[in-house]
Amino acid sequence: MPSESKRMDTHVNRGLAWIGVASSLVGVLDLLAILIILNTWISAEEYGIATKCVWIFPILDQATDLGLSAAVIQRDDHSESKISTVFWINTGIALFLFAVIAVFAPILAVGFYGHAVIGSMLLVYGTKLIFQNFYFIPVAMMKRELRFKELSIIRIIANLAEFAGKIGFAWAGFGVWCFVLGPLARVLVTGIGAQIRHPWRPKLMFHFKEAKEYVTFGLKTSGSQILYYFYTNVDYPIVGFFFGDTALGLYRMAYDLVLDPVRIISNVIVDIAFPAFARLRHATDRLIAQFVSFTRLNLITVMSFSAIVVVAADDVINVLFPKFRTHWEHFAFEVGGRTFEVYEEVTGAEWAVRILGIVAVLRAVGYVVPPLLDGVGKPERTFTYTLTAAIAMPLAYVSGAVLLGPTMNFESVAVSWVIGYPIAFAVLVWMATYTLGWSVAQYLRQIGGVASCMLGAAAVAALVHLVLGDFPAWLRLAITAGTVVLTSGLLLAYTQGISLRSAKRALSAPPDEKDPPVVDDPAPPTDQAAT
Image (cartoon, rainbow, N blue to C red; front, side):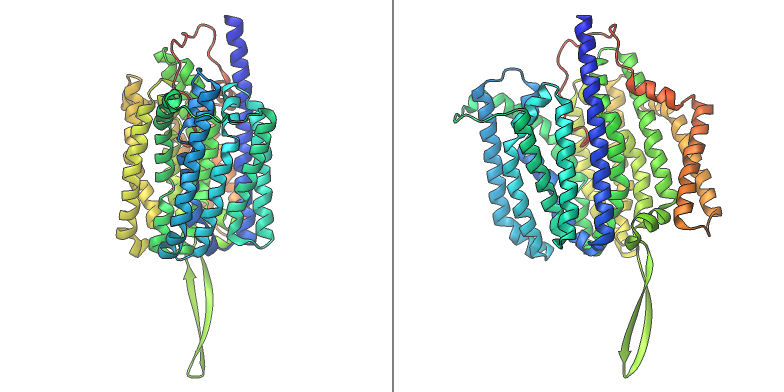
């Protein structure tokens, strides 16, 4: 019924608004925590050591869940025996992974990484894999019931606990342990909140045949997520292996400063994109128009940010992370009673920030396409893309480190992003246009004008930044950022007809009652932040 459809649209839109608020706040808290911790308590070397452990956390999370929570959300044939069986399967996987960590983590930490603390941190984090079973069924059921407001409030409170935990443990002298103990605080609060809002206890029953379809579905949906987290995180141990802990800390900071904000910015649109594409899946013309609209909006926001960090990378580092800038260190030593002084240039993260800022432009488009493929019922094409990236990117990282490392140091791995990711990106764009019955050339023509405007704004900002060479870093950064925003706004308004009002309309306009009905359920959304 039309009225019921309107109520559903309103409910979902409100839920998406809550998700957007929660995601934005979580992203800000994460960046703020890193800003405070790295400038106050943790050195680049210590951050590199922590990264050798932390990079595998999201992979462990996905392997533990194995897509079973998505299966609970998607399927409508629930029974106590099926849900309880899914719970016990997840618990078994978590216990198995914990056992593997307990056996191999200490060996890996000492034998490969050379830091025993990494093994201990992995072992403590392994307890989180077990505890999260306490809430994964209640959270999945709440998502199924579209209780996004409650979930978002729980998420906000939980991430405030993580923020306080990270800062508190770092301040108390726990060092790199803050990056493990903080997330454990988040998990504890999430578990308590989920059980309060949706109490659930498993039954002592296990019927695998009844839950077999849940497992099959979960395996299909989790594959892309695991591959995504692999290829976007495996560069960390490669940097650490070839260039050492301090270089890894610098590289990780550059990644946090550039590609993490791009993910946060993109999530605002991605959270809206999946349901919009699912609604329009049978209206090809409108689907194409919406896809172009979302791509252009994401390009505007991401390229504005990228222009600032690429042009003013040195100022960004000086203002936000002064410990990570290129600088000269003074050394004095004695030989034969004579004192010698040496000044050595210590490489910072500026060039890594600039290079990753270029990658961010492609990532802006890369975040929009998976919701399109999933929304029209083609999740296997998302898997093809992530599989391509999971093969191409590690090869690019290692090749870059070996071939370019002797002259470029850890920046060679950042360059590998520029070389390797376009391969996966080309596959992704081709699949998107093929799915729409369109062509890559048509798509590029539709978004080329926006990209040109943003490049023009970056060029003007670069000239202004050059002219302001003797200004203080914070003032030069502020003027450069203002130049990007003002110039891009003028170019977009006068050449593309895009303004804040038109952008708001493109984001909020829901499909109306004349939209073709969705005749079969679209593939459920995976964690769109990951794809």
